Amino acid sequence: MSWKEVAEPVLSRMPVVERPAGHVPFRRKLMWTAGILLVYFFLTNINPFGLAAEQGSDFFGQFRSVLAGESGSLLQVGIGPIVTASIVLQLLGGANLLGLDTDDPRDQVLYQGLQKLLVIIVTALTAAPMVFTGEFLPADQAVGQALGIGEFGVEVLIFAQVFVGGLLILFMDEIVSKWGVGSGVGLFIIAAVSQQIVGGFFSFSALGAPGFFASWYGIVFGDVPVSLSPFTAEGLQNLLFDPGNVLALFTTVFIFGIVVYAESVRVEIPLSHARVKGARGRFPVKLIYASVLPMILVRALQANVQFLGQILSSQWAGMPAWLGTYSDQGQPLSGLFYYLNPIQSRTEWMWFLGEIPASVEPWMIAVRLAIDLTFMVVGGAIFAIFWVETTGMGPEATAKQIQNSGMQIPGFRRNPQVVEKVMERYIPQVTVIGGALVGLLAVMANLLGTIGQVSGTGLLLAVSITYKLYEEIAEEQLMEMHPMMRQMFGNE
Image 1 (cartoon, rainbow, N blue to C red):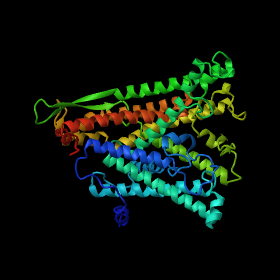
Image 2: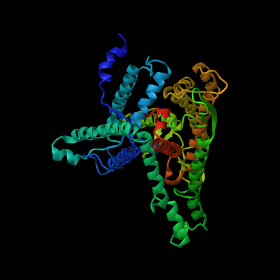
Image 3: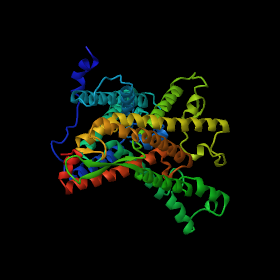
Image 4: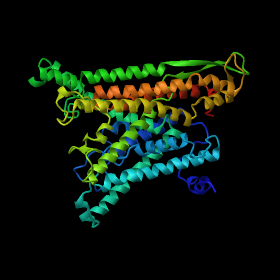
């Protein structure tokens, strides 16, 4: 008896959001998307009942803009469990250990059920150390005394709320994917990153320093202290290197421009309809063919490694120094976890800013940067390949889609194997190059910093997802105006 036969009764009965029976009008899709976005912002502003007033450190820390959610809220875990479950399934699927054929409807149900079950398990495993270690979500002892359940009872109560929040974000993602526009994961990343960017630009107190707009408003109208004047050494350094400054604005605009440009760079393969004379089209193979979504998987893997280090540091008093030593703020200062911790801002490598601990040597930062760069470039390429193969974007799957649509490549026989060979000339190479390029851009953005101190990966994700969302909206509008187009896109 195979594992599929044993697990099928459970996996096939996992709760699921039903797909619409027919075509969903564009306006209704926008309403579902906007409604879920409002619910997301609402949940990020609700603190779990029983949480102490003085909250602990953020579990995801510098990875928060990538993994969305909000520290100290019902959505504490963000999209972390969804991404972690995707990593596990992609690795198992890439090694062909699951034995599932995604073209088989029965195996599709099992795959989706397995993914949902993994998300539920990872949500529980993620929320438990956040609550029960007391490091991230400390319980309010007064609430325990008032309810007569003690501190442990309050921790169980907080855990239950955070766990339910993790399940809510799972089903919210599913609602957007089936009833809205785009994906819920992408929508939540855009919301989290945009909130940080807008706050960093306009806030008069963004992360302890005025935002970009506030800084230059004060300069123009003479409403800044003498020490912050751009005509003094201290003021010039503040404007260039503090959050919401010129360098951050330059990096933010540069990343926006380079991602939009990279999204427009493509190789267009000509297509013609086999039966309708004169009907032609093009299949675009973009430079960032796998999109930047595989970067979520890379950063999520790094986040899980850092989470393991924080847990070991807080719970293992005799942790060897070669594994890592941590500051009072929970940041690694040396050891293995220090070198595996990606550089997230310029204050972690620019010595003249005066914020690097004395124990950190220049060679340590160089090794840390080299590891992060290698991990992002190589990991970006590898996860991009996995993403393309598991989402039906590979040469074989693409050839079948073109064949089923009635199209063919002019000058070649109408045969899936022939089309596949043509696609193999472009898709694998472009996938690797695009994945490595995105990893390089993410590291560079982290080194220079961005407005609102959004991580480089978070900014890349937000720009690319927004661009793709714009393309999907344009496609939806096209199909709304021309119903016959729905058959061509397979959305009827």
